[in-house]
Length: 307
Image 1 (cartoon, rainbow, N blue to C red):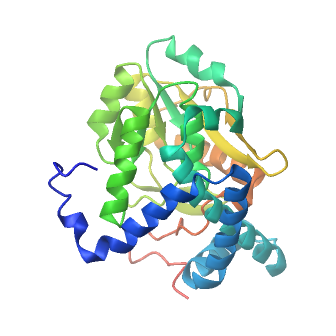
Image 2: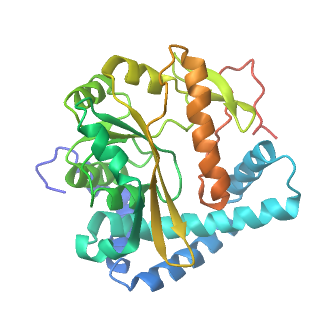
């Protein structure tokens, strides 16, 4: 980060020193052999399972809502594995930001890349529909080895970490689009770019709608179908999944969603939620369960996380 950035001086304040220390450790530890990074990530994740009790309770509530037939032992096992995956994501983020293409090239298996290239040949851009799995950062970086796309991002609670994330996404993907910059997103699509887009977190904006996710009403962003309608861009689901047996990441690109958009934004949101849900069922331990996905839209709605 250059000292020409007007924020740089503020990032030198003592409250950011732990973040600088953490970033420095990330930069050093990514140099370890990949197998060592995976093992250390799982160890760190296992420790945070016992420390982050609030996030553990959120994950438990989410699993109770989404998998009501699971007993507590099953939920506990998935949550423990989920935290191990979160720990691995820390090291994967470092590898994403600073790893060389040569080092990354042997870590991925790609399925369905032609769906993106064929769609781009139509000249209307591509909406890469994704979701907040713990492989989010590494999956995007590995896909960039094959096709360029613009990446959406949201502001981070820690402004220093958020700025580092933004700069690295911008460096790797050329264009990083703030979550609320709809005009910039439309420009990217109309310029025939692919845009990575993950609408699965709880959305409480003015246009939020309640549609089922795992059969539970969830605040959902209906913008996917609206963007597709405005730009004519096909919506292509893209997910990445850790393969514990091979140590690689499986990048899965599905065919464009057929008959989309339909003109009914609620029905379209149900469709996109169902696609994400199907991938979650494939690898539930890799989804971001520590996020409050079912936050109520208003004070009148019941908050499932209140107890």
